[in-house]
Length: 247
Image (cartoon, rainbow, N blue to C red; front, side):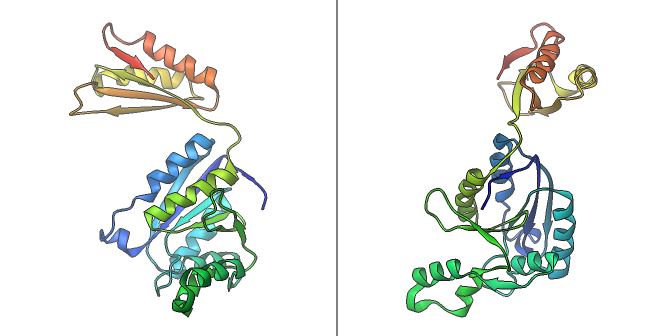
């Protein structure tokens, strides 16, 4: 398998349990925190139910529009684990048993291994396996789709494999300015900085019950000099005594 370089990614998070509130979604933030330092912008996220036609349609769209797509959930042994089927259907191929995954499952479960266990060895025909750097089980990848489990503990393990095989064209640089000023009072200044520095992404995050600061303003781009210019511009126009720190 070749290393993947992409500037943007999308995520498809699968599960009725998430949409019904039976389970709290925990994987999105971990994925975003993994991709950002790699230089990849997580540009779109869909959370959808366990319905084959719905998932297939969304995958067809995401895989056309984004160079990298991650799925979370729906890869287990039960009736509603249909993510592999949806990925296969989106590309017009069949789900097949991967011999490497099947061997790992048989080894893990021994005499207790059943056809239900082996459903976890299904991949879209032609899928590759991305080897884990720490010896964990490999991750199935079909074209631009990475199929990750939904169980948060296992999902986090798989992110080590993502880091080993995926990167962006260049890393993001980020600086944060902490102020003593509430967000509405900063609006005019923030708007002016955004207009003067269109190549920098500016974010504003108020804290209502945080005693140490009132508003954090962030500056992000792939160009360090651009980030530093925008940050300096903002700080220089802050009211006297408003600045706490820059990180």
